[in-house]
Length: 208
Image (cartoon, rainbow, N blue to C red):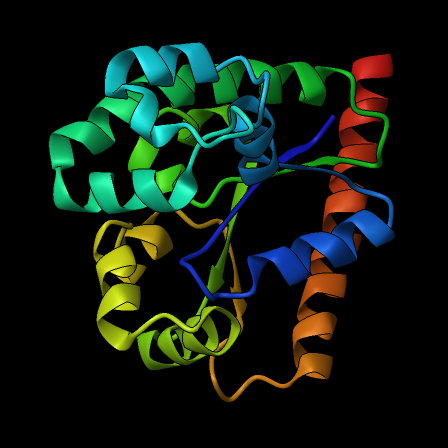
């Protein structure tokens, strides 16, 4: 089955793109959702996180205290690397298992940190980047989260640059400030049709 990696910076609109693709028949796996499952109460990552960082990063329900952990990792790069060393292998294992069981027309795996992780690029048949100019990113994130400009910029600095994402892209969806919803959907629909055709071709070759 054709495997597509979907990525983009915070506020780029990749979640909307993923929702459309799922509605049209793709199997969509979002690694943020996988991460949340691993760090909720009873999640597989919780004992490892508590052992590494102590009980202060675990909330009263036994889930990861995301605000506490976010503050910690932004202040301490070593803490961020330690958290990633716990989470990333678990996320990859669970994501690959879901991809193997996929029944959709093709598989889309949404990975916000696809470029940064360095572990995923070679797995995909194609990588699609949802591209957006930085001022629009900041505006969108502020509108939905209430974060300050500095807080949003801090998050963006921890991510790959726009240039770095575009360097690994096989396909680019333009969702900058001048792109309206209809134009965005038309771009996504064109790629959906392309990926359906390529997935079908791969299936036929595998069946011969």
